[in-house]
Image 1 (spheres, helix red, strand yellow):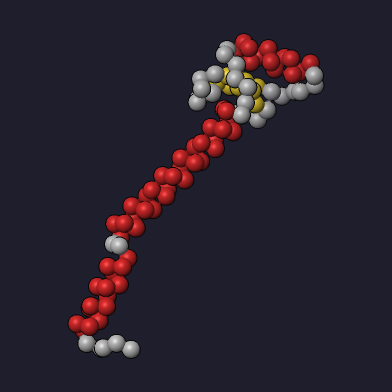
Image 2: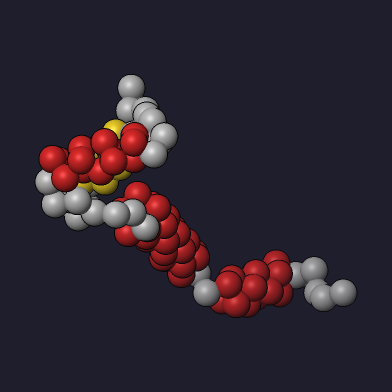
Length: 96
């Protein structure tokens, strides 16, 4: 065990704090991590809601696709304007 002197204890505390790299580094690292996770989540959302779906140039084309699907027994489809590509996609999820 080390010395009990306050100066020796202060020296050990200072040495420990210097090894941490400071709290600024810790907060900056956490901010970068949160930003990276947010970007990954947005990329996954874009892939699911836009990039993995058929894109229709107009609402009319999307409605024709819905009618064609209905002929084969698929019911409950709706079209929506995509916030990412500004095209039209189909969904079976109710909006209301």
